Length: 60
Image (cartoon, rainbow, N blue to C red):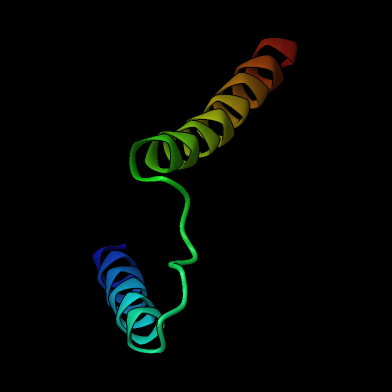
C-alpha cells in the first residue's frame, strides 16, 4: 500500500511539473474542497463496505 501511495504522489508531481512547464492549468480541484471531496468519496466507500458486511452478518 505504501508503494501505491508513493507512486501516486510521484505521478502527481510529474504531471504538475509538466502542466506548469507547458503553461496549462493544473488538472486538480481547488485545494481544500478537492481534498475533502476525495476523502468523502473514500469514506463513503468504506461506510458502504462496513454497512453491507454488518447486514450480511445479521442475516446469518
